[in-house]
Length: 351
Image (cartoon, rainbow, N blue to C red; front, side, top):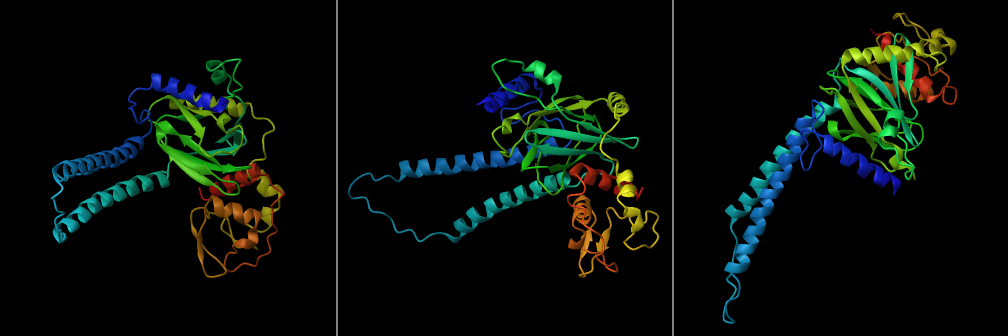
């Protein structure tokens, strides 16, 4: 009940303050929101028009061809091929248009721009945490947001607000997300973006918010009795303000999780993998991220976050062609956070 009240309360307040919101949709606060809405309204109004035509035709036929007397006979109707082709082809054209427009929007949302700022998002019962990179430091934002708690303060409600995700305005932001326990889903209604957050793998979501502002974040996969507590905010800030905030947070980092470069050195990775392109016991990691790697079984794989994660935790799952499966597994030796940091470091080796 508390989580339902929270959603209703926050949704009502957001609706009151929203500019550009419609009856069906919240305000368009990202660069892709208008395209998503266009597809939605095209499908919606197509359905409304066809519904009106069909219901109108049914009503007309009911009245026009009702039995007027007991002597009325049902006429023999053999059908019309032209009519059947027409009522099949016309809806097919609209269905094809819906598919094409939806596919274009899906492709745009599936491929983050190359200049995206990357933030790691971790979901767990029942909170979100966010990790940024700044000058070689990992800045982790987690816990309860005091400002949010003040806005909805009510002694009768057992509610907490998670720390917000802060991003710069006018900058594409790529979220690399994973869960440490159960299935979650990261949803920002104002941006029209949603993606499941899955244990044991990474999922990617991106958006670009052109204007500063605050936007609600919800978990949309039931994840336990406090599912409704996974409420957070995206705070979009002017670039200069965001840079100052991130630098300030980085200055507070003292004993955070081990950075990827330190893990790479301390866990013995340098003994097998070079970072300058030279040959070694294992494949070089210079420029490996994003390339296609040929495997020992003859197949190929794209080197992305999920492939690197699997190669670190279970290296025997996909062995690179020309190399022996000698790497020990790191499952249980590295935390999820350390694996993510190590992957982030490997990404920089191609820069």
